[in-house]
Image (cartoon, rainbow, N blue to C red; front, side, top):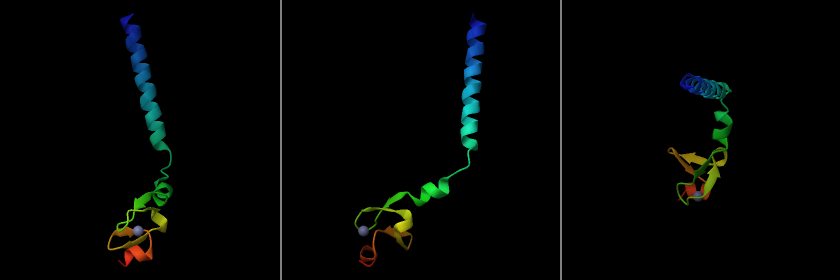
Length: 69
Ligand SMILES: [Zn+2]
């Protein structure tokens, strides 16, 4: 009986290990998700999409007005 439980434990562990491995093998879509990430404006704190934000000196701004303050 103990052996059976051990076997089930090993099978479950192998299943999860396989599942995790398989999941990590999916092609990374980080490029896309990074583009749609929201970041706060340095000046007013408004959240804007990274691709729509203005950047100056390594800081993000929501608009030209904020950037030129
Ligand atoms: Zn702003």
